[in-house]
Length: 514
Image (cartoon, helix red, strand yellow):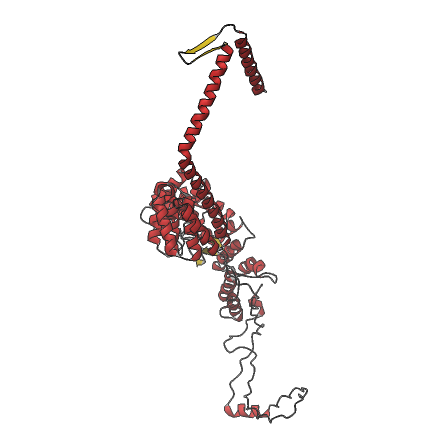
């Protein structure tokens, strides 16, 4: 709206000026001696000046056009080459993304011919080399990009990846450190931290994490978790040499990551040694509610090394009461009850885990075997639970990159990645699980069979009647060859009990509750 008003105002001003100039009286004379004399009004003089200016500007433009024709033609040729080059880049990127190495290489060659210094052309050549499996050409392309300022980070990233693929961890670390020195990129920061942690340089890794957090290349939660893991690793190393410093680091790690079980267990152990039993107990109880873990239970039960088994059993009840239905709580309580010789309580605690519709794990089966051995000694029930343990599902463990460990570690032993271990259940093979072996109940209080004399054994074998053969329909054949006479098979007497079974105890002493 305002533009229209301004335009109309300017148009009115021009019209008013033209009308005013046309109304002005007088005469303008232009005389050139011996050539021409021109007389005109002021309006005509202004018009002539304007017309002359237009003609001169047109002539000057034509003159410049004549002298600029070569540069115009050169610019048009370069524009056409750039257009063809970018079209080839587009085709090459699409072909590389689709996995068509042949089309991508053809487009890359065309793009390199039209755009030899274009960074995208160099990147396409590297991608084509990677797609074709030519590692040497890919490294050469990334090395060329690393020499240019505008593509140096891209080249270092490519060289880092290629070094990792050929297993040269030293070169990969060198490229990552150089890239991290230029800019705090997420991939470079993670690679540097993993390399430092893999070489147990916990302080250096912690400094790198701080730098990454300041540069905001990692989020706050990730930074806090990595700080906690590194502080726990440092505290583990200083547990024996510097207990106070280790305790400070461990408690800081617990504040940063309350779900980090190794930090909680370590802090609780250090607090126990210092005599702060109540603080340690509260720390473990708070963490156990969040994640019941055997390491926390062991630290909780071992707070007083001189306690009796009954005291440990009472403490186990306190801890198990926080999460009563969890498997770990039942295992802790059953183990403490077994140590206190409370067999009935141990069986009662384990009953829901070994019910008919339950699938007990390895630790559950071994616990039942321990109860059987402690209560009845070497018995058939003990062998049964040991056999079931060999085929039972596996229990949770610390797992990192397919490696199962009984203890937590700050880094993966395979890749060196920081905070790779997770408390989880190992993956079972897909398929039908073999049936769990079940032993028939063995009768106790049975007199052992006395050994027979050789003459009695021979007479008994001869006295036994041969079993009647099963009647089967004879097969219809044209000609049947006579079958060879079957070889004599020895007769084996089945025993009522297995040779190594000591026999059953009285029913009043069994008190078995499955």
